[in-house]
Image (cartoon, rainbow, N blue to C red; front, side):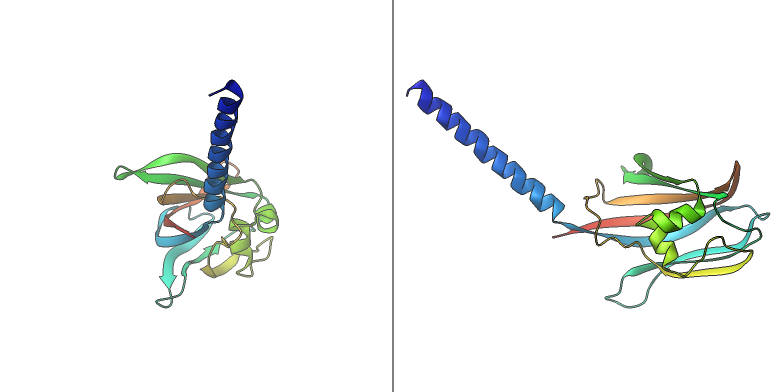
Length: 183
């Protein structure tokens, strides 16, 4: 076998492996992800800012999606003075370990206007910003996940949501999630 034939053979193997890699990447990116909300809990509420906080997960039919319902009474006007933080913990070896995925929104109104996932989920409930004091019921929230371009690196997680006003923690809640990849 001459050197030129060997070179062509190696080039064919590299090209074949490149095509296989591209097909694998295409298959990963063409998968659709779905989030299943398993359960929710309120961990902490600062009664000076928020009262009567309740959060739950509902499914209205066997073939329907999972929805998060949130209700409570706010005592002060919420606008860009409120910050939202979401930290994901991966379920690994029977415990939840903090991951690299975190969302930090410095202004509540800015989150509602610009964020395509969490902000859109809250905005779809009809909340206006700034929100004056009063009772709020955010029903049937779900994350619009149809156009999400990535595959999640893990299957189960706990999302911890923290609401702050400056350095004061207003509330803290957990939402347990399951990620399902569909082709």
